[in-house]
Image (cartoon, rainbow, N blue to C red; front, side, top):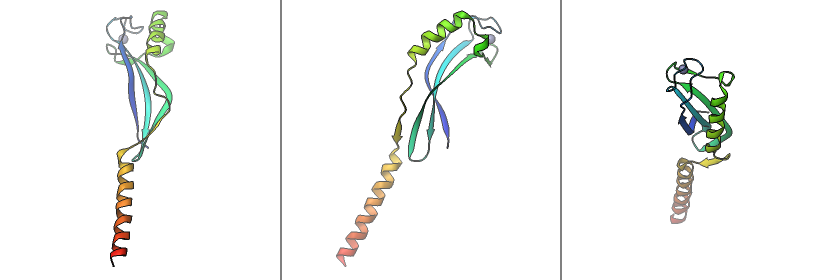
Length: 114
Ligand SMILES: [Zn+2]
């Protein structure tokens, strides 16, 4: 089943990167996984989080985070509220049902007319 990531919240941080020490590269993002097939779309309740440095072009893993980064992370985490586990029906689902109803109506109509 195809999966995509939906970005819930994204923030540039002014903290020093623990790897390259610049203050302009860090970006924190919170994501949610969405699985979808032709008829339905489901949201995974688990939140994905990633700290990326654009200067050294790599992900900074929590083991390397400084206290400052952790503080900022906690702050932003509160602002990223995941959509609760949901399941959405896509328009195609209704389309298929409508076509089905139309087909049955047509069969009934022709059966009665004869
Ligand atoms: Zn860096």
